[in-house]
Length: 278
Length: 278
Image (tube, rainbow over all chains, first blue to last red):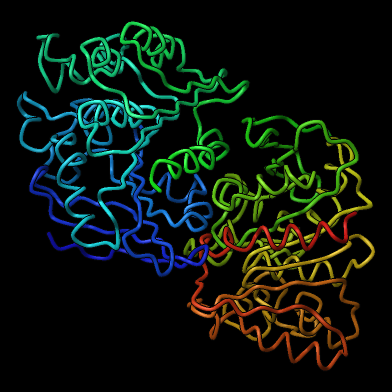
């Protein structure tokens, strides 16, 4: 469970680290970034899951989370989006939405993905243990968030593990992969054709099947090009009605799917989580 | 003097634009980014000059300037660092510190650079005119800043044009290109071997030769790998003593040369400039 430092840079009075470690789940070397405010001990943790094509780097350099994390004393963790390496199978056409960079936060059951593509267990178990063993954090105070595919990951992992997290949020999440082309490609590829098995990787289906939702904030841009075809926020609102649970869902007028949208609202998300992580 | 919109994204209640236009000075299509807070008219302007290898994109996505510019009503402009295009000559070895991405904010006099590499006139004249003609700005209220090579550009252009700007600042600037390897390579290449001519592109020499310094803030990281070999902040402090002028120079303990450093202190710089742009 040892980790190595890939890089470290002082920022906002704390340190932005990139770490690497040998993962038991993915059988590869995995990277994650960690912003650690100066002097914290037993700090609460935010885990941020990135979207398609991203690595741990995108949110780390583009979202501007460090300023508010420094103020609030939060450790901010951003893992990679899939296993990587020459031995890891990739989409035959190297598509951006399957294989490398597109692990979809599921544990694959199908060949050739089953060996390495175990991102659900990597995030929900191994990464949590690695962070807890190596960083100055309190793993009883953890929140999870994410963008797009990572919003799907945050919602489904929180719905399946309500005891591990105090709160969940998402930026422009894929709320129902069963019902969108990105999700259908990923779930059929990683899990096979039996759609019953897909339901545990679909936030709406989990709600409909009785999962408990912890405190939840979702922001969605109204000018997001993927809103109608892939993200379908309305399906989550419908599932909440069916399950009798509530979330704060905000449609942000004129915002798109980019990090300009995330940078604008990440302060709200950090302050939302900080309330539950006290 | 027409400009075209390359991209636009809503962020922090304003719009992050990337524009392109045909430049008379460089004889190429030049790009610059512009963050425009919503609803501003006759807004004050900050011009940010980037460092080696950068384009207009780096500061735009990494520095997090938009949040504070939105609050203060500032238009934030980031031009590219050199002319670009298949017809523009580049360093024979495609080095990162000369040619494309490394215009050094000078007007070249030597072949083959003389035709396109006119970044001083591009920034100090043409870009100012293009902004004034096309954006909701007040060109009597302009400040200039920059990073590394761009800090050199900001300081020298401000020292040569004290009437155009209300204030100047810099992050880890090259304060004396005459006295560092990056500068010696650039100035000899663009201007030739007569070092007398180099003095008007050297902030320290300009101070020693009597130039007026407008209100000036400089931040420099103490852990910057380039501090001793290239940046040499102490030479600027010496030149200030010789010229009998003052600047606020802050050595920031533990910070390096990266955008993590810039992101930490850009809010201070924007608030510094806002005082003089009222």
